Image (tube, rainbow, N blue to C red; front, top):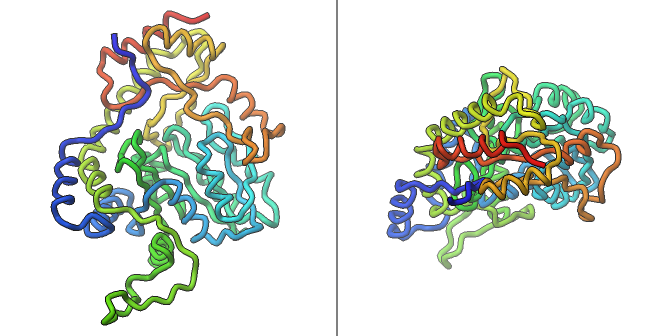
Length: 369
């Protein structure tokens, strides 16, 4: 029997056809496909201020810069994430300040965030762990009237919603990832949504060396006349990646439905199993179900047993503050410490058949020691 994997990239035939068309068009850099991808994503997210970039990490870095984060500032964030979240903060010259998380969501605890605000706090960067939105109203209440920006790392959360609003229109700045194993892939890519046309213009300028293409002046010598005033980056998306995204976007709703069906079945059939704790789900938000995370007793034994039953299980990410880059493990994050010892995720992707899901459930039901 083949092992049931945690992830599997989804690339449909429409994406392949679009890529072929783009490759034959003679225009493979940033062009019409990128603009169309931004437009369609903007329509889906309820936010026309969408900026396509080459990675979710680039989106995070641009969000911090557009939000006004500068060297010497502090950004309150989570250590329960991938290194990219903190690396973007460090790239902006700021200092990450880690707040505690909620044990039953993996998301930032708003009370812990509030306790870490100082005069140097310039932004709060939260991560929707596994696709389940943070308590954004409570987090934004902490930031209100303090000139603190709120940035949503929605790398796991495309298709999620919070209190009736699609993620992408909940926070002033939202960052998506289209990396290989995400719900929607462009192989590598990302997107930033901002709140005003002025912020979008600045993000577009920063993503391409600080050059404002709309203000360039033609020259008989062939290269336009530029006047760059701010350090920029090579963060733009190309038309090949955007073509993949446009093709895959046509199946995103169906893939989200399948993920939710699987997650609902897991929640129903794993409920009550000794040694398993299911996570919180509130009625005021809908997860994108990128991960199905649970807490288990004797986690290493659990993972070994699942592997022996041809089911992959993974923590996906462990707390990043253990890295020297992040300052070393913090001792004042008790819920994160507790979480770190017990959390694990089960396979969840649209290629799983009903029989695959039954196999995963049966593997857990048999127990582990």
